[in-house]
Image (cartoon, rainbow over all chains, first blue to last red):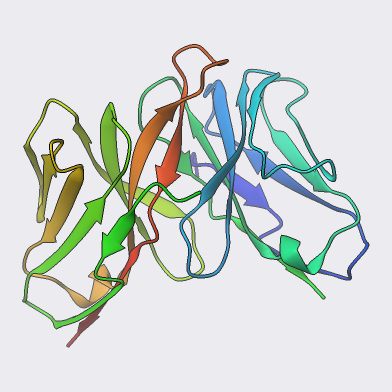
Length: 112
Length: 116
């Protein structure tokens, strides 16, 4: 499968715990995005990487959130001290510079 | 924040009928895209229409764009049960610190149910 992959697909955690999600973009795509989608809503932009550089962060990305893309390939999104309001689907997308963003299957997070 | 609204929020039709979904947005755009999302899954890109285009076709899909009204519509002809999904419109917004890159701003989606 040469599409965008995300791991894990589902995560259940207790409030206060840290979680980390991984995204593997389409090979050679230099642009990578993270979005968050809550129930019944459309996805909302969180952050953008061009190669390994994080060039844009949304105000939705509080200090408890950190994202990396250390070698310009896969990316990780970490949430520290999770809160119930963090429960959502976290989506990753990549593009090689074209206008179409290709999305992964998402990681569904449930914070108890 | 959400860029726009899809209308209707939910639509139920029978197989073989046509489904029309509308999208309104607020700011000027370079392009508008439609995505499909099956329940609990990622988004699948359907079609992109640029701001200087008025209509575009792809298979059973027809998209129109009216930039003067800041609205778009997606028509799915001869619907099938497999078309059951949520449909989102998305507009591009520039990322000012990222050169030519842009982010997508999504609407709230239309949930389409196609029954046999």
